[in-house]
Each structure stands twice: as C-alpha cells, then as structure tokens.
Image (cartoon, rainbow, N blue to C red; front, side, top):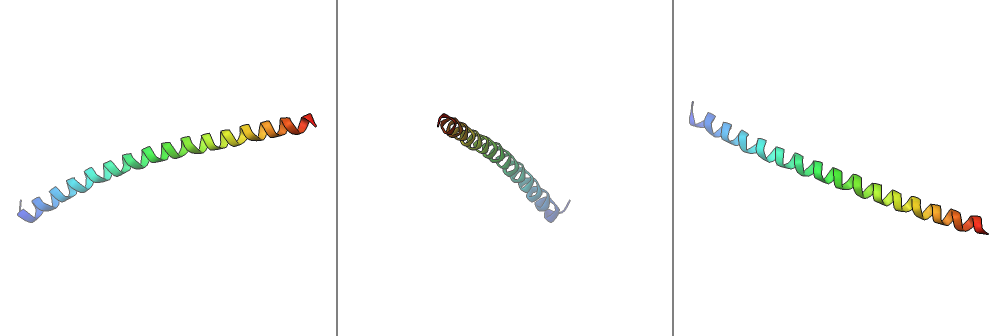
Length: 58
C-alpha cells in the first residue's frame, strides 16, 4: 500500500468518526427540539383551556 493510500484511508476514518459524532449531536438536538415543541404546545393548549373555561363562566 502506498503512502498516499494510507493517508487517504486514515483521512476517511477520521471523517467517518466525525460524521458519526455529528449525526449523534443532530439526533440529540432533534430530540430536544421535539421535547420543547411538545412542551410549548402543551402549555399553549393548557392556556387555551383555562381561557375557554373563563369565557364559559361569563
């Protein structure tokens, strides 16, 4: 195996490892985003329920 081939293989391994790391970070951010959206819409839904209940009182 030539030196250039060895360098390319090592570079490929490094890129693969970095890609795996970025994919995991992306997955974590996606989970966090889904959680935050769920919380936001739940709280918005709760506020709407309270407002609807207050309107019904009048």
